Image (cartoon, rainbow, N blue to C red; front, side, top):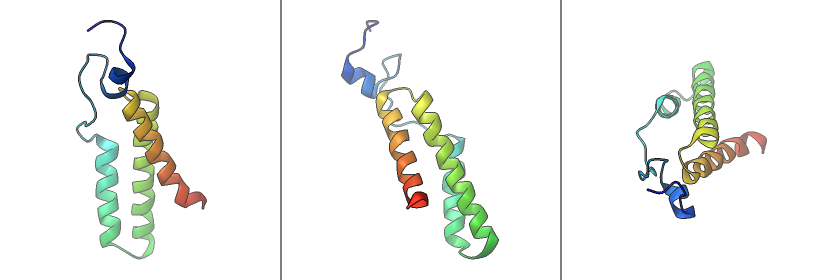
Length: 92
């Protein structure tokens, strides 16, 4: 692959030319999924509040990492979208 990537390549491929729309879940996504599921099962009290906070923190960290360290523009845009969608209910 040439040093100069096309705009389309920058959106969907990493620096090695691999398509990277989907990646294996990393630790923040796993923590978010587990905490979200647990918060749906435990629906009251401090445990629910703690699980909700942990889930929010994990998805915030994941989104932040994607925005600044995502392998392509798609991943960075996905991080920004998830960050905005997760913050909006907190600000509204």
